Image 1: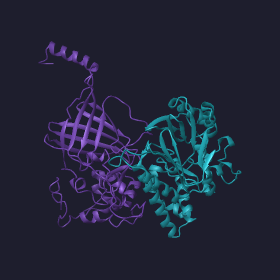
Image 2 (image 1 turned 90 degrees about the vertical axis):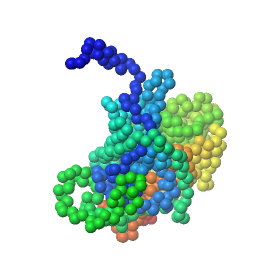
Image 3 (image 1 turned 180 degrees about the vertical axis):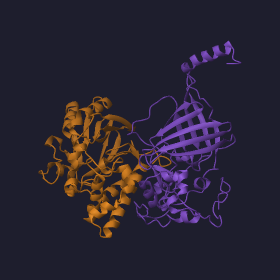
Image 4 (image 1 turned 30 degrees about the vertical axis):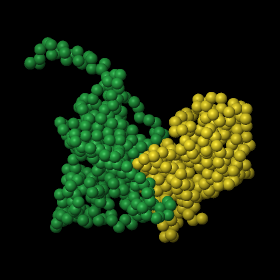
Length: 304
Length: 304
């Protein structure tokens, strides 16, 4: 209590009494244009993950088989896949920069009704409702970005998102179901923003998938329109769905063999997330020479 | 034994109606979705009156009638369309047709494909679960051509027969101005499709029907919005949701066909678990339509 006089205490107490009566306001200012930093997992996030790369994913056998069955030709053969945006969970992870964040203020009460975000790629927009509204019933429409609500916990914005359309945990066919729930923690440190995401998916995950992504404030970043009009690219019979039969994916071992990682480790699963798993892998000789994504940390140096 | 289980599907669908709540979900244009404990209906309202697609279980008729009265005061005409014969979609025909007659003074028109009428009026067959209704619930305007068009409440409505899909009497109902398709049990995003082989259903017919829905539906932008799809069971959907479902049925069909080509028996095919990666989203080990029954129906319809 040293240094605090009666006036300070009185003002503090008065403020404490008044706060619950005041309209909800943002605890921190998240507004502005943000650019993602790709210093983590850049090869997966920028050029894209290899087929068969299920590292660090706490998946079940259903997810593994679904991804093994995925034939990327589907994107070309099935016209309805062409203009799909990321799901609201993967948009925080994948190549979708920059991101604009702005607030929606109730003009009468000056309370914060919602925070909106927009990303450049595929014009992905989200609304995070902060006015205490409930999530829709399960039978309501699901969307790519889902339905988000948020609350402040200290200086972090904690969001909960449901009502996703089926999408992917990783864009190599690794599925994420419509039943998934996304929890995010938005934490600002000066000009840097960390968003920690946790995905619960009863259909494909045995435990939550937790990832963090960092962003830096870039006031001069521009978001330009990104239209997309689907068109047939290859003549295929209606209803064609390219896929591999179980056990028939010729590329499932390519990632393991190229990077010298034990095949079992590349198959994912909760046990592979923890340091103890390393002890089961034995000696792993390093590949003789790095030839792909050796210095991949950003948009400009991931071409190899 | 297994065949008998497949034939018992509609009877089981009539049981356990649970809490008799029917919710109203505005879809778009003049169309609403009525969400019951065991299935969905579509209802279109306007100056001509009320058009109801599927009447759900007989015991839910009072709740359905109550929701319709909330949406449409003093309707001039009342039309019912049955997407297929099962009692969880046509069981309320008699009560709701009578309600329409009493409230409008005009006899309610009940439209369905002629195979629905044939099934409803057939002599009871001990091997086939009953779908007979009393004559007051029979279709009064059965159609026998591939489609029937009507103009009601200011919009064209296409009733499209889809042969040998969920049953042999399935209809899609396309509200052209509201841009909404009601699919009946051809599309059920919360479960595997029920293929009622005893009433002419086939897996290829289901796939053909799903491809037709995809052909009809047009997303507004980024594979989202635009045409809304009301499924027989489950959440309100759009084209992208139907694409996911079509892919699932197509891939499982291809896997089962490959196993049949290897000479496998039904038991061997079921043991191979050709639907493993979809079971956590669509499968069930209990209830009226299990994963085992679905795989069996695919196997048998491909074998015929």
